[in-house]
Amino acid sequence: MAREKAVAAMSGLINGVIVRITLRATLSRKRALLLALPAIILIGISALLKATAATSTSWPPEFLGQVGFTVLLPLTALIIGTSVLGAEIEDGSIVHLLATPVRRASVIFSKYLVATALTIVFAAVPEYLASAIAVGPGNKLSIGLLVGAVAASFLYNSLFVFFSAAFTPGRALAFGLIYVVLWEALLSNLVPGVALLSLGHYGLAIANAIADNSTLHPYLSTGTGIEMGVVVAAVLLAFGIRRLSAFTIKGDIA
Image 1 (cartoon, rainbow, N blue to C red):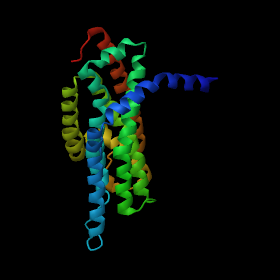
Image 2 (cartoon, rainbow, N blue to C red; image 1 turned 90 degrees about the vertical axis):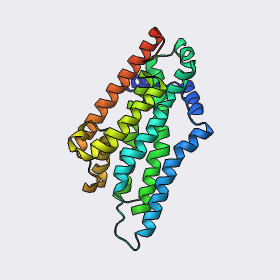
Image 3 (spheres, helix red, strand yellow; image 1 turned 60 degrees about the vertical axis):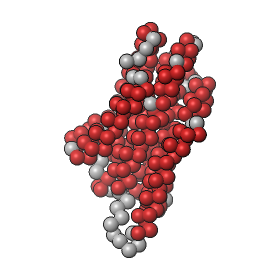
Image 4 (cartoon, helix red, strand yellow; image 1 turned 60 degrees about the horizontal axis):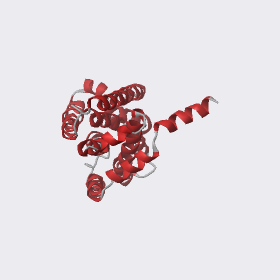
């Protein structure tokens, strides 16, 4: 009985119509090409470095942890996460959506599910493919990076879907870009203490639980990464739901 109630509650949070509409809107031809480009570049660089590694020992496959988790993943999630609500807010169709008897939590979770799934496809899977080229598909590093990248996809999108609900599309993208460049790509890799509030390093900590590779530099234990990740993601999604609920009353977003 308890399991049936849990399944019913989860199904109430995911609206199939919203999921399908969001998928169609997000995967327009131009946007799909934009999302695929960084992944193609990453895989190409990995193949090139692997080819040159035959005569050089300078190829460090662990760079995928830093480049993938603090650049590729957050930038892909930023583009997707800020667009799943942003386009509807920008063209005003969000008003019609919120006028329907759909729970605000269902809107957020449906958009979040789509954003996370697309980030996994366009960033987490390419992260694994690039690592598989470098060290082999069954290597602990490859598997660890895949698991960590999937986790990071959930974490990053909780932030960027919140930005999408809290700000206008332009501001959401700008704030997200500042966060990715300054916090994730720069400070979290230069100042170890910043990793405690870094979504990318939560993912790296989870990846390192499998990879067991100190050169990934997660700066956090696996337990801390999981606990902090769950708490931060839950808080961000809760704030996103609250902000979207306020939108129905005020009629605008800051």
